[in-house]
Length: 119
Figure (tube, rainbow, N blue to C red):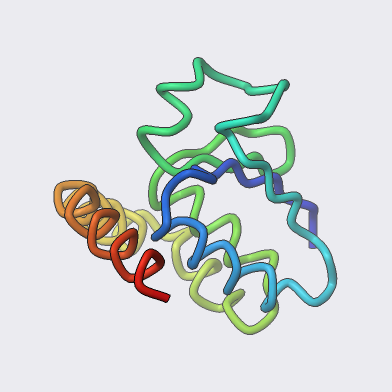
């Protein structure tokens, strides 16, 4: 298995929760998690990097569902899903679901932000 770099939005309460889960699942330390809001080294314009999920696997920059699949392949318990995503029809379905998620993401961010404030 290769190492993967994942850029995430450290200011997003939803993203922080998800990355915390992925960090716990990454018991072999194969993922380098980078907070794109404070990272000095970004492969893209910061606003572009924060608009979609991005990962680097084997020197290839990926975004959206393909980036999630790369992250999943680095985590043994999620690896089967990541491997399935190498098939175009599966990746296409995942990307469509991701695009739908992006539409509700702002509302989810606000909701998770309120949850953090109450905790």
